Image (cartoon, rainbow, N blue to C red; front, side, top):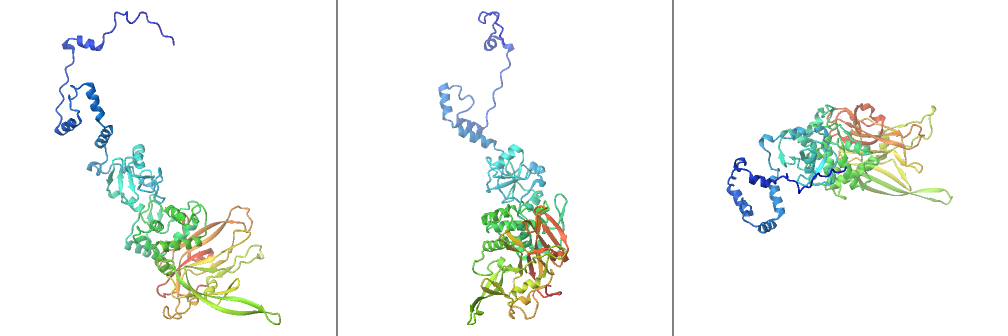
Length: 561
């Protein structure tokens, strides 16, 4: 755009405006505004402070510009910032009584999930972690330069709970909120129980409801399968229904124990929490610790064998609780599950006699006593051929038949050694049996034996397989065990057109019994929980069985058949 030229020069204009200062000086007195009132005298404290800093009103009017600049250079700008910050800092130790419940209406309980590992979502730090009660995210610290403080300023979420101390704070003000309305959140973060409440779990079954009004039974809730951790879920569910172990981890103060014990204790208490916000629990914290301790041998991204994990987990729980590697029954884990076993071994030798006939010689028998935690049961070989209808035969074998391995008479040959096994008194309060279904195969990773083991869930008599000892148990009296948990295997074909013997996807389920005299059973597969008939337990491929010893020989004793 071309500027229009001025008609005349600015200097030659006779109507040039007069400066404002000249106009004010030339104006008559009646046109001037009234002078401002004199400033009020400052209070003594403020006056003294201003005198100390050299900024008293009118104190610099008689100074020259050089003196004023010299005084300004002597003042530290950081000191001014500190004084200004301390004067305007809104953080205080306690709120005003009129606003003690401020921001509590912004809390959203449906967004809270305290099952995952306590790490700051910004810095990934696990120190001094706070959870936002509005969005559910984790942040570290609550100071003026921490992620939680910035989150409160930027997003407008003001209520946070310390995951260690369970104290609730309002940010950015920084004061603690002591309101009874937040007790339900503290219970979900870290459930605590009294001995009377724990005993009541075995006497009666009281249903509960979550935030979405979904009914659930405490102790019989689903565990989240994050990716491939169903092998861990079934083991945790089974161990959480072993009463002495459950009561110990729910009632004892384990704050000084290693993280493995702490996280397992927290998970067990959340499983039995009657005031949960949701009807399932996630084992993420325990999985992270197990993956770290096992060098990722047992992790959430790859499926593992439940028996291998159970053996590893019980051993590390034993050591974390102060147990000894050499002394038997030195921890609660071994006092509950450990028994004694006598193993007799005899070498098999053969040589030809004068008539060139092969002749076996009986070698000396070696006997040793060893402790055991898991009792392994071997299945008979599966049939190789199909039946007349062209279908594979699924054989069945009674549990008492495969228990004959421990009668002290039946021998098993391993390479060039004949082995015999015999159980010894006293038997443990809880007996873990492992039915060995998988054998290594050079063509496939492992070969499964589909044999069904039939059993009765009540009154399993183990006296025929235990060496008599009148000092520990009366001779001829039955030793009755009742089933508490049963881990089953189910093979699912990866593809619809897969052939027989091709690798299958392993699905693990667990069946647990209600406490007390109730005979109700529940079947759990990850998040799915449903009732199951006790008569149908033996129709699945059992893999791990947990039996509870009866304290007295009550009615209905008999042998498994």
